[in-house]
Image 1 (tube, each protein chain N blue to C red):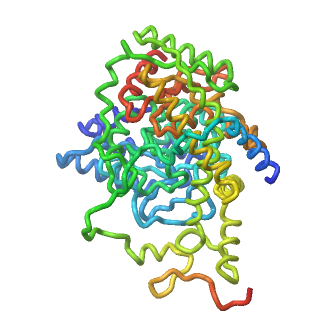
Image 2: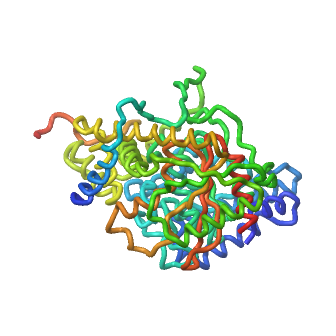
Image 3: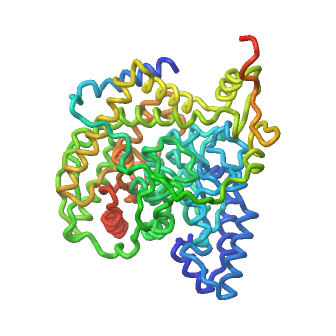
Length: 72
Length: 471
C-alpha cells in the first residue's frame, strides 16, 4: 500500500503547475448560512434503542475501556 | 418487467395489487439473486406486510401515494429503523439504526414497498463493488463483469428486475457510472435537493442521494417524491420538491447542448461513437450543438481524490467501537480504537483515510487539501462560463463499458479513472444523469451523461427524455 500511496501523491502533484494565488477556496457547492431551528422540544432518539446498538453500555451510558489510571 | 409508472397506475386503480407486483419481484430475486448478489438483505416479510396494507387502503377507498405498490431497493448506506444497515463494512455489520433516513420516510409515505438493502463498495468507496466486505455484485448483463460502483447493487437490482426502482448515493459518480454499466437510468440531483439525513456520510460536501430506474419518466417521478427541503439536513436547499414529469414531452427544440472540446483522454472509441450518435439525435430533434471548453477538467481527479478522502477521514472517525457497530476489545481506549478500525475497515477505506489525514496534516494541508479546494473553485468557474452559452452538456458517463472482475483492483489509480467524467459534477454541486444509449463493441450498455447547472434538472430531463426517444 505504501508504494500505491506514493504513486497517488505523485500523480496529485499535477495541480502544482496551476497558479492558484488569487483563487478563493471552495469548501461547499451551495453557499448556505448557518441553519438554526426554533427552540422547541421535538422528538429525539430513544435512549435504550440507541444504547442497545452500542458494543457495551452500562447504567444508561456507553461503556469504554479504561482511559486513565493504567500503566502506559 | 413493469415500469414504475405502470405499477402505480395499476395499483391505484385496482387492476393490479401491490402484493402481486411484489411477489413477481421476489420470484425474480429467488431465481437470480444467488448469482447476482445485488442485496445485502432482502426484507421480504416486511415488504409483504407493507404491500398488503397498500392493497387494503385501495380496497377501502383510502388515497394511495405517488409510488403506490412500487418495489424499491435501498443502497445499504441509508438508515432504516430496526433494519440492519452495514455500508457493506464489517465495522457496521449487525447495526440496526434507531431512525429512518428522510428518503425512507418519504418513500413509505408515498406508498413504496422497500424490498431490501443493496450491496456497495465499502462506505461507497469504489467503482465496481469489489470493495464490499460481503463480496461483489455481478453485472446482470454479463456476470463476468462488474456492475460499476459504488451503488452497484442498486443498479443491478433494477437491471435484473429485482426492484422497479432503487436509490443510490453519488459522491463522485456512484449512481451514474453503475447506471451506465448496467443499462439503466441514474440521476445525481443538485447538491441539497434531496435530504442527506440518514445517509451514512462519506464526503459530506459531495454526497447526494438519487434514483435508479428503467426509464427517464420513472426517474423523474421518483426524484419528485424524494426531493424538497428537509430541516433535518442543514445543507438542504430551502425550496419545494422538483417538478420534472411535466417537462418530459417538451422536446429539445431551440436548446443549446454543450460539446466539451477538451475532454480528458482515455475514453474507449466505441463509447465516443455513441456520444457522437447522441449529439446527432439531439441535433435532429432541433437542438444546437455548441463547443465549450472546460480547461480545469483535467485536474478534477486530483481535486476529488484529495477532497473526498479528506472529508472521509473526518467522517469515518466516528467508527471507534464506542457508540455503534463492532468493537475489538483491548486493554485501553486507544488500543481498542486501533484494533477495532484495523479489523473493521477494508483496504480501500484504510487507503482513503490515510490519504485524507495526510492531505489534512499540518505540514501538507496547503500543498494538498488547500490547493484542491482552489482547484474546485476553478472547475466551478469553468462550468459557470460554459453555462452562459449552453443549457446542458453531454459527455460519456464512463470511459468504458463494464469491465471484468479483477482487471483494475491492483491499480487504484486506474480504478479512480473510471470516475473522470462524473467527478466534476460533484465538485461543482450540479445535477447530472446517465441515460442508456445503445451498446459498445462488446454489446454491453453505454450510458450518455447529461449535465446541467445548479437546479437545472428540468433542462437535463428534457434532454434525457429526448435521448431515450432516440435510442
